[in-house]
Image (cartoon, rainbow, N blue to C red):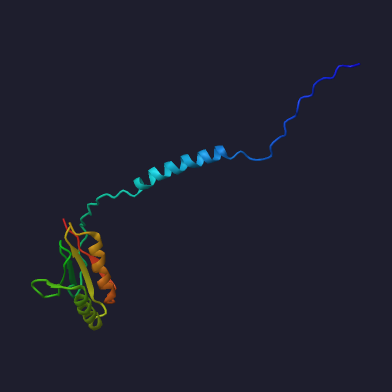
Length: 142
């Protein structure tokens, strides 16, 4: 009689993907993105340049809208000695009336160097609402 050889049980092959390493990688990537995302939105101060460009020659002087350091808007009409402080609504009405008389009206926005950019954009929004198309920015000519 022949001796019976004990048989080893064969292991079944798994046909599933082992996702544990992928989860580990995804968690590491998540942590990296959570740490680096706030660093991407850092703000920095910009010292706006001055311009050496010559002023455009025109038959008429432009209207000047000034933005003061405290955010107050003022309007200086051609020929006026001092600018007149105005609320945004009154400024829009005044500019609208001037624009209806003269389609070629030019407006220059002048702002203190320390004024927040948001306030300059708000002044330009008021000018745009008055339907004025020719708008420029005043710089410190050196």
